[in-house]
Image (cartoon, rainbow, N blue to C red; front, side, top):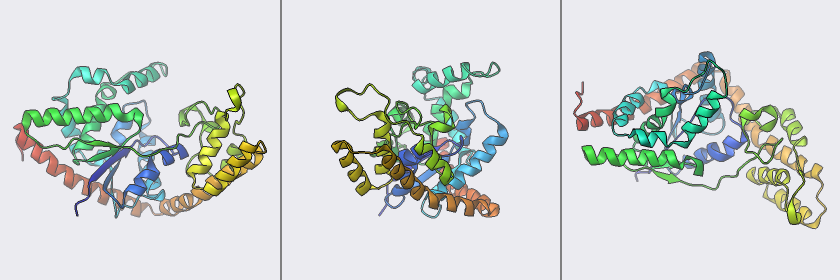
Length: 335
C-alpha cells in the first residue's frame, strides 16, 4: 500500500530544546511508521539571517546527529541536508516566476525578522534571500510532492503560499503538483522557565530554555529555579509558571504523577518543591537516552558523513525526477 508522504524541515541554528522536541521532533519520530517521511536540515534557510560560516557547517552536522539521536531513523525516513540537494534552488527560481511580489511582501515572518536584523549589528542588512525564502520553502515541500506538512498555527501562512504556487503552476503548465495539506497534531506549548508568560526560546538566553541534550545537573538546576507564582492571577487561576511545569510533566508522559500533583494543587496542598522535583526527574529520564545516543554517534564521524551523503543522495534522486518533469512542462532544455 502506498503511504502518503510527509515533509518537514528544521534550520540548523543551534541545539534543539525541549520545546522543539515536543513541538516538532517527537511528532516526526511518531510519523515514521505511518507515512513516507522526508525530513530536511535546511542550511540554506539559515543563511538568510546573520551567521558564521564555521558555525553553520558545524551546526548542520550536529543537527543531523541530534535528529537521529532523538529517534529519526535514516532507514525509515529520508533525512537530507538541503545544500546537498541543489535541485531545491533550481526549482526555487522556476517557482519565483509564478509567485507574485505582493504575496511575498505580506509574509509576516519577513517583517518580524527584518525588524530583528535592523535592531542588531549596524553591519547587518535585510537580504533579498530573506524576502524570497518562502519560495525556497515551497520548493522544499513540492519537489518531493508532499501530501502533508506538520505545522503549527503560526506556520500556516507559508504552507498556504506553497499551495498557491502549486495551483498557479498547475494552471499554467498542466496538473502536476499535489496541494500539500497541514497535518495538525496536539502540541504542548512550553514557556520560558524564567519568564513563563513568554514562549520557550533560545534567543532570550540560557536560563529561558532546556536543551534536549543538556547535562542532568543543569536540567535539575534550571527546573529548581523556575519561576512559579508571578502574582496577579484572578479567581485562584493557576499561575503561568506552575502551569508550565505541569505541562512539562504531562508532555514527558508522567500521567500518574501529573494527576497526583494536580489533585494536590486542587486541594491546596501542593508543594512547589515536589512539583519541580517531578518535572526535573521527568526531563532527566526523557533526555538521558538521547544524550547517550548523541555521544555514541558523535564518536563515529565517518558513519555520520556516510549517513549524510547516502540519505541526501536518496533525496537528490527523487528531486531530480521532479525537476526533469518540471523542465519538460515549462519549456526548459533538459540535458
